[in-house]
Image (spheres, rainbow, N blue to C red):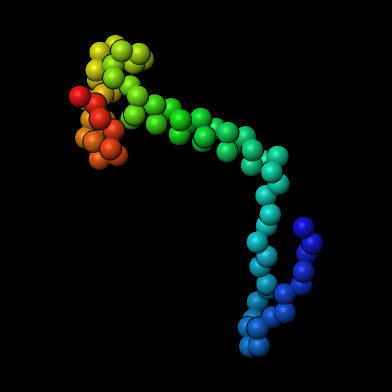
Length: 76
């Protein structure tokens, strides 16, 4: 990206702040982390019925039960 000088507004005082750019190689690991975290949350809300739950039983299903109905997922 090219850097363009921004003309100061008449009467403005102080330095002009530029918005820094973030390279994709620094952003990619965070995007991957939050993407996988989002998929995990989506699994627990949408697909987990207690059969393959990490804690045994239907504990997580009961915690997210109303949220499932709010998002339109049938669960019984």
